[in-house]
Length: 345
Ligand code: SAH
Image (cartoon, rainbow, N blue to C red; front, top):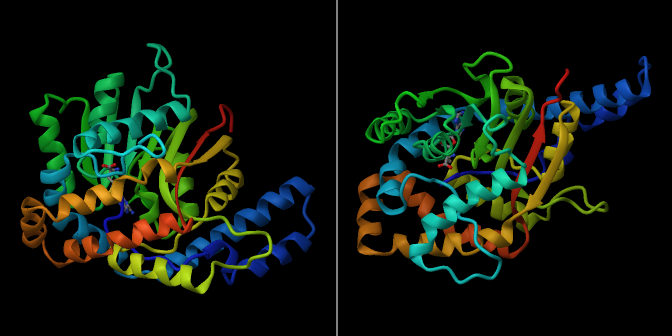
């Protein structure tokens, strides 16, 4: 999850590369299908590359944020640094939150129809944007799988490995500092590719998804749970100015680059020939989460942990009410996107 971030709204719709799509479509190419795919790929790619180029210092900022804030988060909320999943309209009590965070993992696995049986269950998992490794340890225990996690934060990687050792999981899970956009893994290595609330930090959404697809084995499932902005209406060319302003304030505090919409992710997945693409809007299911985080932050323990952590963490905490506002306005969409790499490429 981004405990701090920044977005400008509608990168795919707004991007200067948009005319590329139009002109590419006009070019002669061997088949209409190929032409369509090439044009879409070029467009999404060009947009993403521009986006990456305009975020100097982003990686360092993200690493610094999580180096600073992960200890405080763990001491209050434990090792899962993501939203909980609640029944829509449920009034959640503090003691429900860990259960809700585990439920988020289980709901994501169920939505992607990840098999449980001994033969087909995941055996090699990559946890992209792993935090302190809560998901990896959970998946290693659930499936007996080998899990490799990557994060930009050295503090997180070290803590993830220490917790794995404490739980006797060192032979199953390991964490390292690496960039999701240039993963240190060979092609086709993992049968479950997992990204729980890290996509919102990626400045190049096309490269992000294409790296997830590259390291996926043929037939592997890819699960992305992430923050999106709402889809645009057909009559709209961009989000409204007040919406852009709200996202910008969140992004400034949370080291987030441009956001995109759920349908932008679908476009990207299609452009990469991924199969069984499914999305769901779980915004209602995460509604109790931020109010609960705010409540825990204003306890004595919360306040002292925040103050000890430093400015980035405090700034992130100050922006939490804007997340609630974004969900209430229907602007922020908590989204799951799942797909599969084709068996034959
Ligand atoms: N998935 C974890 C943590 C979510 S917090 C959990 O559910 O507990 C977001 C994580 O994304 C952080 O660990 C951060 O370091 C990581 N991240 C953000 N951008 C990244 C990038 N480019 N490469 C690798 N990890 C990244």
